[in-house]
Amino acid sequence: MGAAGGAIVLAIVGFTWGGWITGASAEQIAKKNADTAVVAVLAPICVQQFNAKFNAATTLAELTALPTHQQATFVEKGGWATMPGSDTPVIGVARSCAVMLVKPA
Image 1 (cartoon, rainbow, N blue to C red):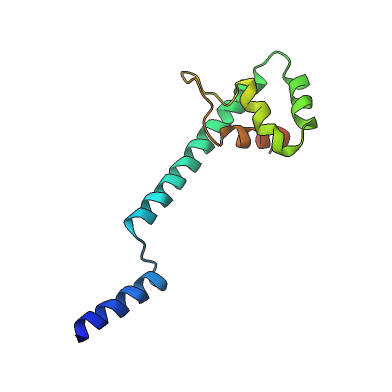
Image 2 (image 1 turned 180 degrees about the horizontal axis):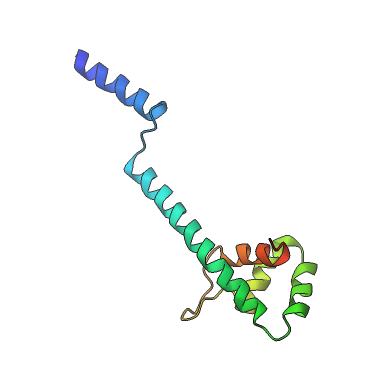
């Protein structure tokens, strides 16, 4: 009985203060980190594709004039968030690309 109680207390302490996580939580964290890394790599390609357009300055003015919540849709519809060899934009790339275009580093 004492061992079972000790195991329960140990589990509570471990998950509450010890930083333990379940396998499902670890998978969610890993997926989020992977998605973040993919966006970080592909967003500069999106910017390059945007800037390669023959009238990039005019298009950038159009993008900048839009409300922030519409800018990612504009980038998606323009096709710049769709990577070569793909038919659809990568989730998150358009938003990051728009931010990089409107607020260059």
